[in-house]
Image 1: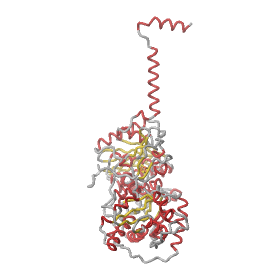
Image 2: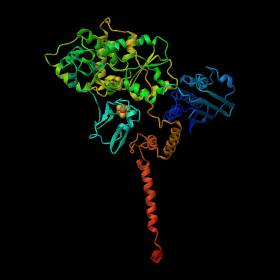
Image 3: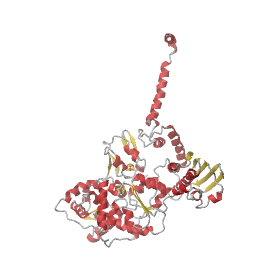
Image 4: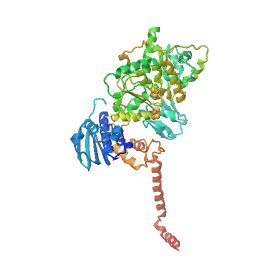
Length: 142
Length: 443
Ligand code: SF4
Ligand code: SF4
């Protein structure tokens, strides 16, 4: 099962919509509370990254009984130094966006923390592809 | 699954099936079927939004009546702090407490006192290590909202009992010690501004409730007004101060805690926005979130008789007046064990499509497909809150595509076209007639 969303750069008013819809879908499917929480953070941060840094992007959520895969493909400036981008607090967001309270350089580290597998590839002046997988681990209480 | 108790229910005779409540319900718990609103039990959080919005006064709250007092030897009224704001400015809380005795209670115990104990416990709790922000446990509608829509945030709820329960426990203890009554001889009644509290009593979050019943503020209001004028009504001292009484309105909790960084949000739809933010990892710079489902806090509760804005002025003035008095030393139990919520609050997965996850995923796919095919106008004529909800209902087997008037019209059009087509068809035996007709038509 797959859900797909188009995201536009600089569209802050709608940032978070895809994440919210994915959350509801996961609740309807009956995913574990923890899986839903992590997926929500991953999807939201990824969505926000596109809004802040790229021109446009597509976010897909692939839902299966034992995992959720979030894939985000964007057209944008790309990331020159991925290792640097993964560091907490490192950000290339311009100051006007930081003033809005976004772009604090926690997006990618948060995504990494909340996903079980993560892959990031990027080409400068082309775009970025992010894949994050969150396993649906059954917790004790049902 | 165990059936839920609900305070909020429908007066079928008054309901016109207008879908106002369907659109307003924060958990999409209402549908209109056969011209009447129907509440999906496991989703309803008893917030009373539908009571407030219903233009036909068809949504009601089940509460207890004063006649219930007869079932007990000794009865205690627990006035919610919001009660004081329902009366004229020259009616003091002391008079209101006296009037409660006059209408038949043997004693009263101010919930504001419990609120003071909780405030101190909160202050202590917040200075320890905890996930941020912690969320208030005081409004049961908010807790139920979280069970249904924000299960991932349940660990953020402060594990402290509500002022109502604390007060009820203390009131019982007092009656036992002073008069030697046994537990089942004592009847404790909360004077409630809301249906959510009624549900919290009949179906408590903790092991059990110390409260025996809930009497609607608007039901008791007339009686109180009446007895305020009666010469037999004596004044009782108000034991609580500004801090406790202030809990009756939005912002009061935070004011009572005083230290730490906090945020107060009121109105269920605003709360949803803030909880969404917390869920995405935001607001971790806040220690405590005070959240009240009703706009304005409990003074805006669906069962509070006075207009919210009028009540707010009165509450503000009362709190101001009380805050000029020196804090009285409290002899309340602040034993942390007594104040603790004794059971974890667990999720209520009311949105799940199916117990089997594979089946649920198939159903979700189906929901997506149907949603795609619906007009997306969210008109509500089908009796569901929006097109997507109708798609869910169809997949769950509660509705049919033909509930959508646009879909129905489409089908009628197709049918009509088929009928026209069919009407042109001639049986072979009549072929010559048809030929003649056509020729004449040419001419
Ligand atoms: S009380 Fe609240 S949750 Fe329940 S049906 Fe009414 S609006 Fe919906
Ligand atoms: S804010 Fe107060 S009156 Fe309104 S639902 Fe919550 S507890 Fe009840």
